[in-house]
Amino acid sequence: MPATCHLSIPDAYAGVFGHFNQHCVLASCTKDDEWCKLYDATSQDCVTTFVDPKERKGQNDNNVACFYPRDDIILNDGVLWDARVGAMPIHRFDKFFQSSSGCFHPGGNEVIIDKEVWDFRTRSLLLSCPALHNTTITFSPMNDVMYAVGNTPLMDEDEAPMNNWFRVVDSRTYDHIHTQLTDRDIVGFTVHPHDRYIAMLHHSEDIGDSICKLYTIGRVKRSAETGDGASASSGEDEEDEEDEEAQ
Image 1 (cartoon, rainbow, N blue to C red):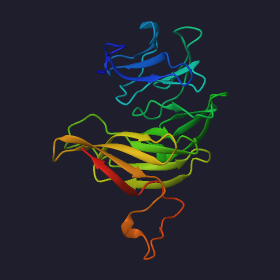
Image 2: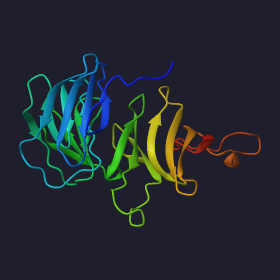
Image 3: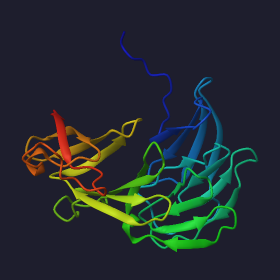
Image 4: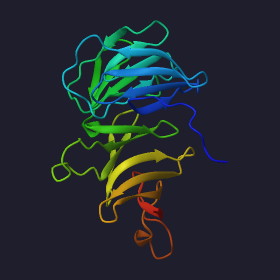
């Protein structure tokens, strides 16, 4: 049966579902605007539009609004909103870097904006984690590690830095565990629900298309195995073996 479009949101470039209420969709605007919108996917109605009345300096090309773990609070480009109250912000975090919009830690007590970690309850700065600078974060299903993929700024391709790497960070201590290089720029990243695999979407200049690769977590390449077939991997290795490539 062919797929049909259930909800179309004009001028939005990113959207996320609620953690518990899957009928809630939070849409982020294009970089020329400064709003995010909360939609009811069942009725297809826009419930609330969140626009910060205070002008923000610069534009954030990597901004993606997100839900608090209980879905009642929204974070959009460093600004907190209470979805139950209305469209007025409840707090603005200081942003030391414009490139990252931030996310909630699944534990619910911390807000991560670029490399700065804030206390959600007191709104005070807890620590800085340099390994998270200018990255987009994906938490593992067990929420014990973060996968931080480098952001690529929108500029001429000849000038743009490579984002052919991701870092593994302990989500409790914020210690840097491992940095993994890849052979192409990463444009998409996701983790298997059972924490067994990583899937990455790469952009390939030579064939003018994208390539999806599947990696096994916690194993090294077969060439690094010992003669009796035992793996020589260490406990830090989060991703080393390329299992499958599909074009």
